[in-house]
Image 1 (cartoon, helix red, strand yellow):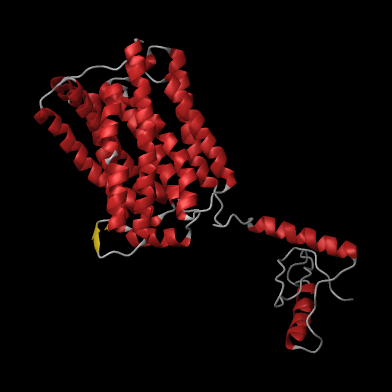
Image 2 (tube, helix red, strand yellow; image 1 turned 120 degrees about the horizontal axis):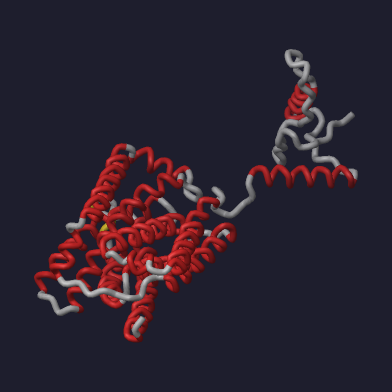
Length: 388
């Protein structure tokens, strides 16, 4: 590729990374705003001073940066760099929002995303094309893009309709499982925001192409207006996801879907897949990079449901069993209630009741257990001691 194209791509990548940092900071401020009560709301957007600041930092400031970046490099090269924002989010969200970072799977997922970002950046197409207003309108009327756009709109309306019908149930489910939410429920607002976001980015790239070519402002305004409409829907459902779910969970899912939709629809609309498919090696490398990004982001489904990173119940039971065995080898027994107390009598009856096998099931075997005391609650199946 030409040296001028290479320099433009490097500048575009640097601008995109800086834009990702601004986006993460804006998300942090909007998340803070959604956690605070406010008198004014528009849809899922909480209007407050903090939200306006987050909107300015995360939405308004990156727009000119993205327009410039898209005018310097192909869309399919820049969109996988959203993985950088995921890595930045893993650093900023726990520190400024108090969300606990779990070493597994958060760190391996972040590494996978960064590897995928590197591969897609190296393999992505670097020969940018010049488009006039007429060329862009002809691309908009191509049958392949029309069918893809129809599928996008049906998906968006279907998800919005489902979320409106089950709004209460979805909110209750998010409150019941804050650290490990249902991934399908997380995908609903993330998918709507990502699909609208890919339309926004396509329009921004078109505006950048027209500005670079010296087109009239009226032609650029058509695409900027289209970007503004889709950006409003995108913004609303981004805030809905931030309000219901941890940013540590929602942001990676949203970014993964945004990468996929931007890449796919960018390739379809701008015919950038022709350059990518011209070399089989680069095509395979690009696909592997996308796979690493998707794998890393969906690894967040393995997060534990305990917000403090505690062990699972099975691990707790195993730890209790090991502790009990160690006590037995040391000749110690667990504390017993005082003789004659109500808890002692009930404990004795409960122990005898558990020792006695069930008469209806000849294959059943006695289960040894004691009633829980004020200090201990022993699960069934862990070896305990009973006075002889």
